[in-house]
Amino acid sequence: MNHGTTHSLGARDVVLTRSVFGAPCWVSLTSRDPHATQDFYRAVLGWQYRTARLGDRFRTALADGVPVAGIAGVATVWQMAVAWTPYFAVANADEAVDRVRERGGTVAVGPISFPPGRAALLADRDGATFGIWQGKLVTEWEAWRQAAPTFITLHTRDAFDATIFYGGILDWASGLPGCGEVEYTGGAVLLRSWGDIVACIESGSVDTPPDPSLRPHWQVHFAVDEAAPCARSAEKHGGSVLEERRHEAVLRDPDGAQFTVTSSRRRCRPAGSPSVPGRRR
Image: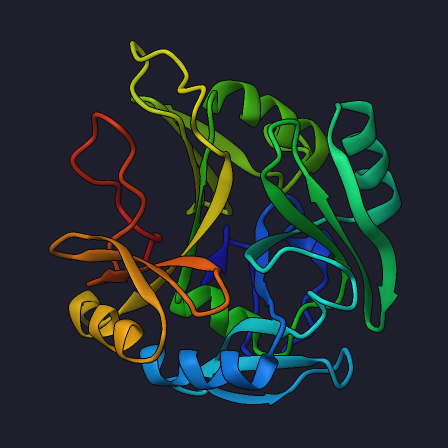
């Protein structure tokens, strides 16, 4: 991947959050039983694992040798809900946390130091959980970004209000060099980082009123060869299928965490739009 014409990184280079601030930089799953969780995702997604740098409670999941996600056995210790959570890169964790408080969000945990960085777990004004990370990114992070094994979508009541909230915290469309750019299409907002679409915020078409029954949440999507075999494997190994279409399935693992598998590397589908292109190649 080429960050414009002046910045290019190899898979083994050290990448700092200030280089990609405002963009999703990782996804992590909190778990009550890490061993059972690892077995489930190994069966459904074919993941392998290695010990993470953050300590014994953390594992890094690998897909074809590329790190794709973290599994943290801290749900019981920190009294956290079991859920997939996206983390956004920030230049200063303390400043980002202050901005969350100022804008009516919630600080659940942190900032906490996890060498080589600092993290915090937060919630936006509508209760959707997300995290921030300051410091070095996971080894081979650039390979993770290039391979695009994950994509995140915020399902919320008001996409435009949510964009204002996150934009104020993460410096989207701030005019700062390298900041995230936002693009409005249909009832959704797309986030671009260095030209690549990296996240989507959606709440329905522009002429549809916000849904008061919707529980806002970030949904993590994993690219797979075919969604249907993953759905069958999830059912076989104690999970469940919440929704299934030809190229996509929304699944729940045995611990209750929801995630999406998407075939053929399809991307976020904003309301009113037949498709959205993936990462620029």
